[in-house]
Length: 320
Image 1 (cartoon, rainbow, N blue to C red):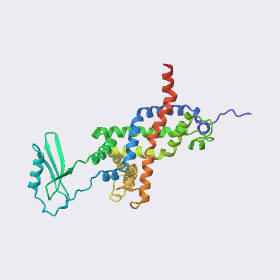
Image 2: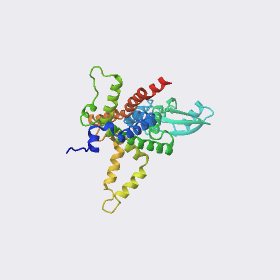
Image 3: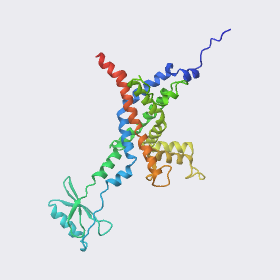
Image 4: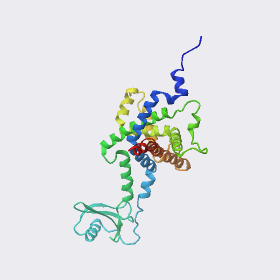
């Protein structure tokens, strides 16, 4: 008597996943999430990688303090303000900030309507010694705001969090789609460079390889991004899972988990790489790893959109 029973569902997933209806459905979810979120993913990926070095960028953009070299006595506030007003007739004093020492330049802002002039003045001679505009610092601050909320305040932050949720879905469906079966999974870990392989197949290999090797990192970025956009929801959930008591106050597992989730997003704590004790090779290596891996979503967008163009858009345009 022969056994007519076919392979089980698990066996079909293990050896022939491409034939499964669920995989095809997940492929469509993955495809359309990628299409809808593509430009968002590209932007967040690029800006996130740059902002790994946000502290260094801010320091580099900070102008060197201007030092007064003359031996004259320090002028009082009224004299400096009068000199600034003489140099800029019609403007009113808006801000007056002396340096922490007598040698540092005094920052003076003068305002007329919507126009603001920001200048440094020598505290001993009263001379205008340069612009107090902080263009580089403002650029870093603007980039941070764009990455966090698209410069749209709380509304932008919420939209960012919702988009990050869909990135989580994109990663999870991508992991299922990547699985090629027991006989071929090792071949899907790297690109194939054998003679005769077409460039379109190489794009697929590159997309799969980057996706599988960086999936955990991208998932961490996405989940932690959701947390940073909706911290109250996570904290309320943590309180439900592990209520605060007199015994665990300040020592709960959920508090430590959320603490690390936030810092994993940046790959650093107070400017120091996660596993490092202080500035140095370890610190710079961790930051470099986060910056490089942070570019993976952008690469996934480029390779994914290229495949979509080859398989769908170019054929549609050819027919029409």
